[in-house]
Image (cartoon, rainbow, N blue to C red; front, side, top):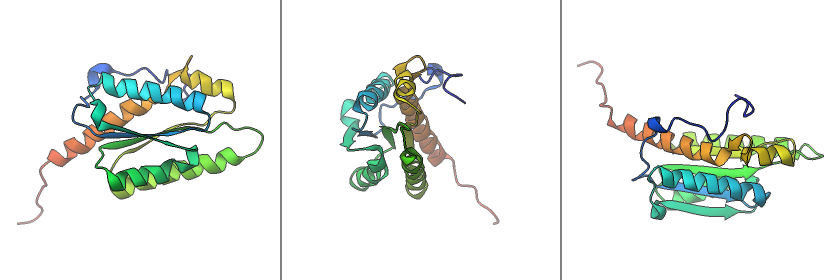
Length: 172
């Protein structure tokens, strides 16, 4: 759904699990830092709002969005995490570089999440211009960082819930 049709900061708080015991990694790209740091603030504040402990939130900054998947893998190799949130912003500009970066990052995070079983959240803005980025980083369409935090908490809880389901025996 287009963010013009749904505010990125709006969600059903009554449907949110507690993040009290969750270990969450946040990786933030410094490129377009005015945007990404605002996304980070929304993300971090949302995690805290849902009981995440400050000591259980690990933040790493990387040079740009392209580095997010590698940093996520490094974090997963060194820390036991319930979810990783990757925050970046690639503004289209005059060339098609954005297509290559956005595709590589989305596929990298998808593959990492599938391979490790740890949710790797794509909190990356892919706007056509700076104003669209501002609108999605606390502007008129909300804050994608909030959406990324909500997604991470919910996906981490789904993983925990699935662990509790008894394995069904087939056959004898």
